[in-house]
Image (tube, rainbow, N blue to C red):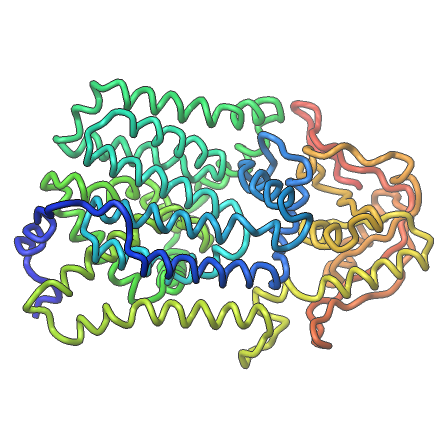
Length: 520
């Protein structure tokens, strides 16, 4: 039995002429987006910061054109939120749920242009039902602006496809440039657009139009400050991110992990509809369907890269996030074929009905686990454990600092640096003494402060390695025991404390051609 109707049936549905393309969603969709955005803002205010968020907060204190780990947009958005609401968890995350809400409305318009109103409604609902969106849009990471601007570019392309007006390419260029300023993965959107232009005969006329080339120039111009920053900082960010693309060996070890992660993060039913929609829309794209080709071909280069990367290294679960708007459209297209077909079995239509509820249930469980752990698993071993217990832990660290007459807190990890700096802001300086290239955006610490005594906080599991390192570097240190980071009296991690003197910071940017100093 064929799971889906024939290709001819699909093609007829996809080419159906609608009297008028709706410009705005119904009040039901506006209400849905408003409710989920309000809920996410409330959760964002109370959920503790992740280690990465606390680290990005340090960036936001010194907005720049680039940073060691990523492009700068996440820092700019955090800085804007802090300017509006102060240096709070809510402020740092404010634009994450808001951008997901605004992006959902533009995604509705994109799907309406490419499909129809019912499919556009389903696209928005399923996009927000994805676990990777439902939970991911609560925290502020580089993925948040990257998916927003990728989605904006997709919308502008859909408008250009429908209106044949050059002006839309200007918005494509702005969105693509800002997307690159958000995360380097948005660079794959460019080759995707070229595929859409080259493989669809009806689109090739754009190659002779001023809009396409002007939009490309705008994208390059908007992204150029990031290139300049890297050129003036020994290309540290490019080397870090693009260095991982070079395979050292090939293996199938990580491919099943990548597939399973996508199945879970998109939720199983939506993931299945994405696959079917990708295959069916891909076949129609080969027949010249420019509408369905848009979400398919703009995603192909990045998707091919992720699959190839999984053949030699692990693909992090958040990497495919920019493609989620396109995937939601493809999933809604696949679902519309079932819903509109008179030959589809009842159980197939039931799969369509349960896809969104399952996604929202999973997202709710994860959010509740973040706010107050309740699942029957060891709290200390979950990925969420690194978010908890920092406020009380920082207070105890500061008490130990005062008791040892230390003037500052030293760390050897950006996670501890960010979390302790957020909790001890205006109380005690928190400085990571190695990997100083991570903090090239900030002024160098006062040498007089570094020359004074400091309290080193480091995971106890690595204490012996730190002891050996400090001895080899002739760093004077005095062990001060250990301290546990807890959440509701549950031990999450144990840290070793050392009173140190004679610390010397690693150079932020070593002289060209020379290696970084090994000793702090």
